[in-house]
Length: 419
Image (cartoon, rainbow, N blue to C red):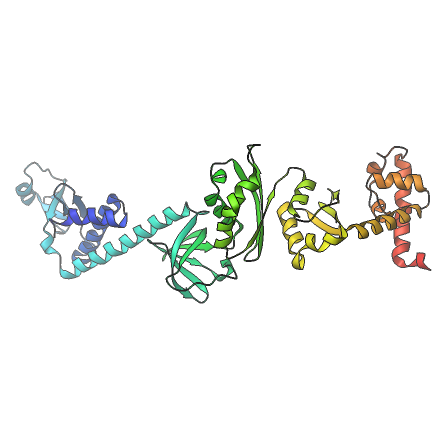
């Protein structure tokens, strides 16, 4: 066994991917644990692995004394001289022990400790390897399905694809190949837990990065991704090179690149839109394919009123509001999509409410509308300092107009004006 020890250590280090030094330390600790079990705690032992000889050496250390009181920890000067003629009184003398002194129980203990430490070392290596791979796509084999969660064999370890991270249309059985995104890696006493996802927006982004060289090279950048997994997604892209069309790059020749991603996501529809630093233009792009007639921006509330032709309202909103909902999430703005008829009606009613306020004539109402105060309600919420920026309105007039607008809104809401 001793002659083969070096070969075994080298083989295990190579096959398991465990550092040679970790194996040697594990072996030394295991033999020391076994020795303590055989001889008890009242021994001062040291275990070393001799790499040249390829064997484990166990030494017991005893203090050189004149009169021995504890034979486990002390040795007489006369006996010590026989072992090491150069030793002196008070020295700590290391005496090599024969491995034949270990019992079968000790050998079994050593074996158990080695196996345990090897498993711990292997778990730590797997954790270290995968914790730096969060955000990557991995390929695996479906090992089993446990209460809805899919357990995936990644080769050296197993990962979990929880129900919450599965695309609704996904169906897998044991032995199927599966592709997923490493969402998280956690370390527990029993080993690392690798959580996979197929619903995370970054999974879609990573798929595009794998399919589109321009993204991998950094020419095309993915700015934002939103998804309703299994149904529809929107991805905003931009290009650092004006000669490279970011949408065209992602779509690919005859749609080959985007279709590869759609196929992986089981038919999920993907809208690829151009990101724009102008929020209004970005919103228009995000609501495609609907045509946008007008966008009214309210930066204070971070909202936009988006006006579309009457016959395109349902297209802009989408089935069950999906298109506008995804566009709002993609752009980060609250969106109110209305048709032209509704917008015209709102403008007319707003204008009528303005000229109903004491002190506001048609000319002033038109001026207020031009500056974004399109109704009595909007005027009632204005600040005097902002309103005073309009030519012909000082702060005193502004305060009076706001008071009158608030009174009008209160009377309107109470129904007093209908009487």
